[in-house]
Image (cartoon, rainbow, N blue to C red; front, side, top):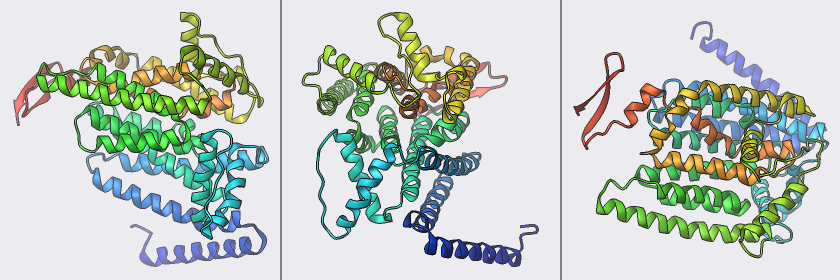
Length: 457
């Protein structure tokens, strides 16, 4: 405790309480509910998150570094949320998607509290559903967009944690500390999925689906209900993201080793059939969402072209690359993963985004030795196939977007999976993941890490 004796802590608590009471009194008499309501809701949300973090830490005592990363990442998320709110409501004067949801929910939640629950399904289903989700949240916390930002940011934070947990389950010898630092502290993850909007909601359910995929490919219990919940959460807002996730799982299941047994082959066939059926259902929902009468390649191409034209606005537009050549495909990956470059920026958020892109380019180059072992790891790890195919599908689907701001927001749903590839095991550690062992045996790295041996438990 040092200088922080009980008396000192009591004095600090009393001063903090007095300061809060004064701020509350000021807000109550001179500010709207957005301010004085947030002074109540935000501390409650933060307290709940900290309690969950404490529970997570207590359940994972073997990760001694994780508490500091989680706490630092959480408070970084808090700063990112304030920044996101300031940009939306101060810098842009409310000209943001969050304001549409806020305006709708501010009126509707008063009716919901009276038991009058109604909505209209005009326009795109995803936007309508976000209005309903925001209304449901406002029914609990009141019509305070600042507080709403913190609720949605909290959902995104725990989505990132679920993705981290999926990575740890599927790749137990990977560099989990590096991945945690990246996914919890990278500016894109702190800033973009931190507002009332689709990205925060989707990141939560992408995390749920990723955890379900990790448990499914490692034959752990609970995978099916996680996948079902993730699919429902994504399909409610953006069914085409759910299609990308389940299409990647379907392809990964095709590459899943069978172990040369009848049971292994049967499990693979059943998995392919089930995931294929789920993919068809989600694809049909995505077609309705995108307004596609048929699901032919030409119809999809026309829809993507239309979306590209719709994103060429807002001051951050650029000319998208064409996917009609190998070079065009390569440039699509560069664009979706790393752009804008510093000479392409037009505002402060994009400046930060450009430096992050340069950092990721440098980290990708520095991770070359890790990436070099990827083909070997793919032979026995279907979850890695899932990660790579999802990245490829996401890049091709969003390559036509022509606005850096919109692209940066969408990228937050794929970036965690790319960070997994940059956090693969170091070459010598990776050998442990591929040491052929029989049931009841464990791999041990001996001596100077150049020899492997199998020892009985």
